[in-house]
Image (cartoon, rainbow, N blue to C red):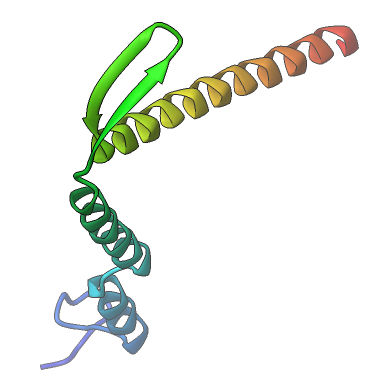
Length: 101
């Protein structure tokens, strides 16, 4: 039996190395999993009850839910600012293009 590059049983050492690298777990996934696990322990470990006063709102809740609400609020503010910044950047680029053209 002769092996040809077009033959499906032919595998170069470079392709074998690439296939082995693809099968390994990404370091980013490992770091994300570790951070998620630490975050879960932090969330579950903060079960003390606290009072929250802001403007005209008064709540009695656990610290863990205040942490979660704060994180979610931060994500919403961050995404809103990023969306606004990108639209502004595109608008200015379009204005420059119209001014030059």
